[in-house]
Length: 170
Image 1 (cartoon, one colour):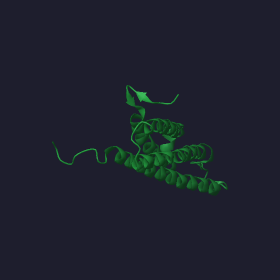
Image 2 (cartoon, helix red, strand yellow):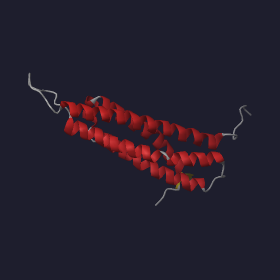
Image 3 (cartoon, helix red, strand yellow):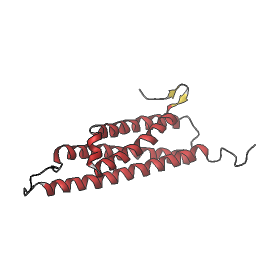
Image 4 (cartoon, one colour):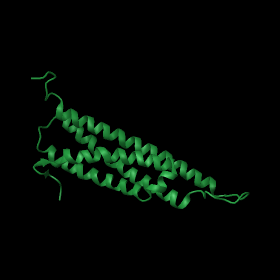
């Protein structure tokens, strides 16, 4: 069942608000959790859970947008907005994958905090490398997701508002 109307209003503009809030919030949490394991300790499975919710909202919002696109005047601005909207899904898939990687790395590969004096941990370097890669990937998918949300929102606002208001008050 695809969303069409919510209380007589097209679902797309309502769902967009959830995406505009949750995707950047997920991106921020992902980078914070990857960079500071003490934050991830508090988040736990909530981090991949938040990424999963963000991911689930994207196709739902896109589907509602496609429904709405068929019911508004066809313009190049609307087409551009729809094209950009289709490009967010890979970024949110990436955020979910990296969130799962960060959680897994913390849960199973974290360097022990309390080692006996004089002991050597031969696995510390691979663990640190995995962690560094997780941080780097977190930053890449977070920035990509937020930039894409901005691009989509900007094009959507232009498609709705360009030429439909007066710069002077009545």
